[in-house]
Image (cartoon, rainbow, N blue to C red; front, top):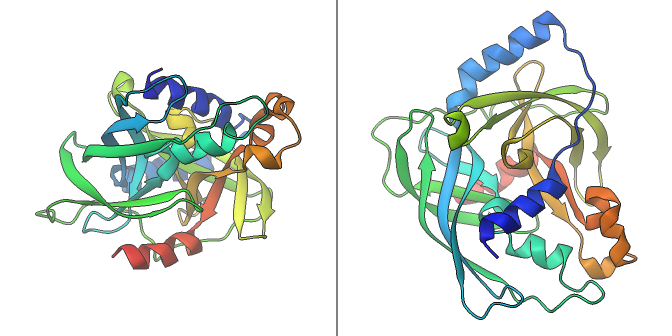
Length: 268
């Protein structure tokens, strides 16, 4: 089993559901302006990953993974969904412990970590902070950039409400020439406990939308698409996996800007 096949299976579960929605010409123009202004801050995190402990394998499996990532300041501090660079915890929670499933003791090691910028340059990087509970990872260029990097504006943030229209910025992969892309979404629900998070419906493709940056109609940063997981033992039966993402225990959510800013302070 190759790691990219494992990730592809996860992405199939995690695709944010498409919705029928119409935007006004002004809303579309504002989204294009946002892409032009902030699109270069949406980059791609890439790494060589070795996964050990896969069922039926006694050796490590090596592959290259990549993820949407968002530069949050001029020094190159960048955030992404941890589950894209290290899917081990998500797989253990989603599959490990389910009736009849083998025990999983997965470990993932990353090497050759780099950020692929909008101009095609690949910058060596290192992980400076990770939070498995929030599914968030922060990276930084190994060497300080010669000039400030394009970044989103964390001084301009917004909270969302149910039924709000939001805009997702993401970056596609090699097959599309690494183009930046836009998706419109709607906030379906606001979850307040155990912490604030949003459920957003949006037609997305790149990485299932994980690591995409979410903005409101005024271009203010709302949050990042990550994964909320639930241990298999907490679900009623293995048949729950047939009931969509939530039934499988891996639900894409938008982690709000306030949570990200607090954690980013520790990464600086």
